Amino acid sequence: FVNFYFPAENSRSRKTQLSITQTRWQQAQNCTLKNEHSEKMKLKTIILAMGILSFLFGCKNENRYKDKHGNEIIEKGDETFIIPTEYKKTGALYKMFLRNETDKPVSIKDKFTLKPNEDKIFEFIDTDSILFDFGTKIYFGENGLETDDKKGELAGIGGEYWGKYNVPEDVEYGFVIVKAGEGDIVAE
View 1: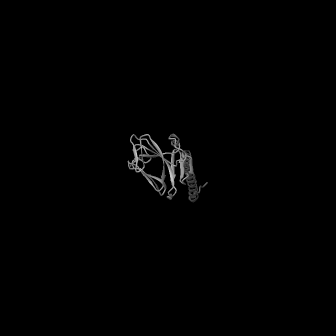
View 2 (view 1 turned 180 degrees about the vertical axis):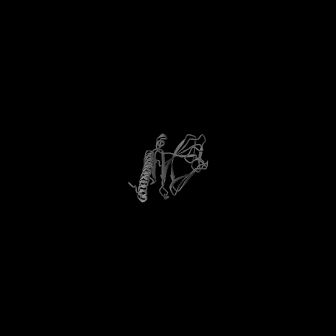
View 3 (view 1 turned 90 degrees about the vertical axis):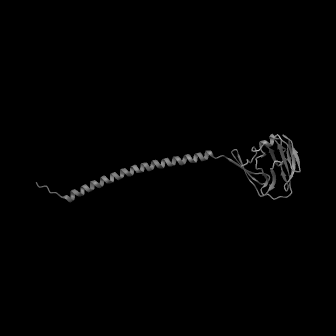
């Protein structure tokens, strides 16, 4: 018997085997890459879901309404935001409540003096202004009633404080005079 050697055929089968081996190796790598990609996608999905859930649970319900002056009031959690309406001065009269909670008398220029722990209800014309002896000013500007209080000596009241100070329902605005820095606007 004579063996014939055909290098071309032998070479082809080796190439085929090599090609099959390379294909299987590539498939194995692709499978690994797909698994890694799949794990990354799962991780991204979990992170996204956690973000959405934390946003939803972190959101506070907001309550929106308009007051009798047309200002939009937004109450969100324990914060209150006011979006003022444009105000046009007409000479209208408003009832205002003022209370002095400092240990010194406070004078309102050309009007009256409040002793410590004294309060007063008075009428206020929207074309007028109130100037306190300690520099704070209350006036009607383009957005309605405004204050100029650089030292934080004035606190606007409403809600539960309206009842605490026994302010009548027909009073439109209320303020408490407090020690510097304890008011609504703290000095910079």
